[in-house]
Length: 402
Image 1 (cartoon, rainbow, N blue to C red):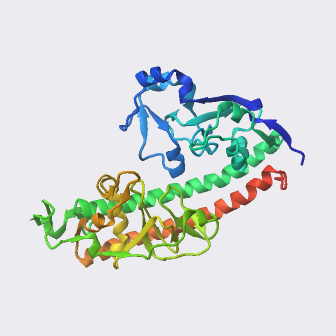
Image 2 (cartoon, helix red, strand yellow):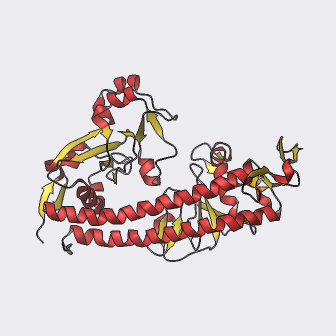
Image 3 (tube, rainbow, N blue to C red):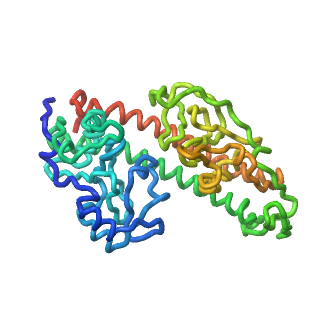
């Protein structure tokens, strides 16, 4: 199949960014990013890298959103990093709310003569080539004109539509699995919050009641009341620390059957594993980050892989997630790049119930972890299929029959 070589700029409806809306002074005067939920989300690279559009968000009000009229973002818009990892491209999902472009991104929208999603997949396929246009000795940057002059090869419109539909269907299945996993995690967390933070358990009829008949006793160590019979321990009393990894991130090819955890946002893939079972993976540098996985996996030199003694391993992910922010504020220290002070975390005090309660919790939530693992592996297979098909579709090696 003969493909047409074109410049990206020949098909653009718009390429814009945050700074297209006015001078630095006027933007500083009129725009204030807020952590509290408001009219519109300010989309940032970290949202795409984490594939998380619920946490750690910035917001602007309606007046600010309207002021930033040249950088309003809509579903299926393409966003591109313009600094640092310049040239990386992302597709905007439908968040069912108003969205504005963050500072370090280009907003790219093509005209109707080409399929927008096809152009995203095409650009994703040649992302390494696009990144070669970035320049700079320390921080890499790419300009609008450089983006406009990038040459790619495109199919005719009917073939564009078929390719976009096929790849979109695969990505939709991946997104659906991710949504199911988030629901499973939320369900397990809700049970944990009720049982171990609010000390409420279901009775035989399913109605909540306070543990131990509601008898609470004051604990001087925690300066709060806890259920009678519960013990106060330190994390080190239940922790099992896995061996330090010898594998550096840059040594991983991102292929294979096993997840590879790092201190970054992405979870890579590898051909060999270090641990199995339910483990937690903590960032050791930069900012606090807690991941967990139930199954065979590997991790990098800058990741602390820990689990807990029998039964407690199912509580540990929720314990760590519940203190993630305070971990970042209190346990990450240093003058330059901050690092996790493991001894501080080891000394963190926790409240532990009886083995009977722990076992009841495990009997409920283990199935959620198992289902999340299944969805994870399904997504790995789907991603492998997509990544296998993408270059062959884009260079015309394979075609899609009607």
